[in-house]
Amino acid sequence: QVQLAESGGGSVDNGGSLTLSCAASDSTASRFCMAWFRAAPNKGRERVSSITPDGRTQYADYAKGRFTISRDTAKNTLNLQMNDLKPDDTAMYYCAVGVEPKCVGLWYGTVRTWGQGTQVTVSL
Image (cartoon, rainbow, N blue to C red):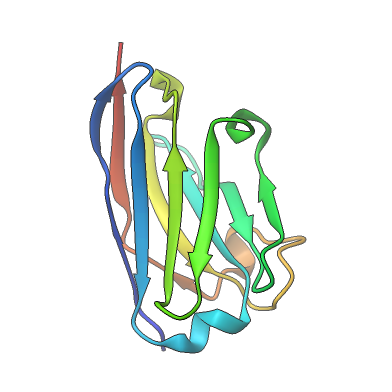
């Protein structure tokens, strides 16, 4: 089973930026949807953004215009560039691999593989 390792989390001030990275252990993920989820303390995981193998992207409304998702198939990596971060973005962010190429309908119950998560904290 492919393993995912997130990095890039940290603490920033309101309006700051962070880039999250996810490294997959092998090329298995290249055939499937990949996504970033997040979970605020004591909250369930919600999909932040996703990207298909052919580059089609999806963003939650709160992420549009601020976040950019990308993937590098050759390097087996997934990234999330986050700009203009706000306190409401504070959460644990998780990398995920779906069960099919399309990202439509992807939710926590259809995730193939989860990373361990990386913490993002945005202060006022």
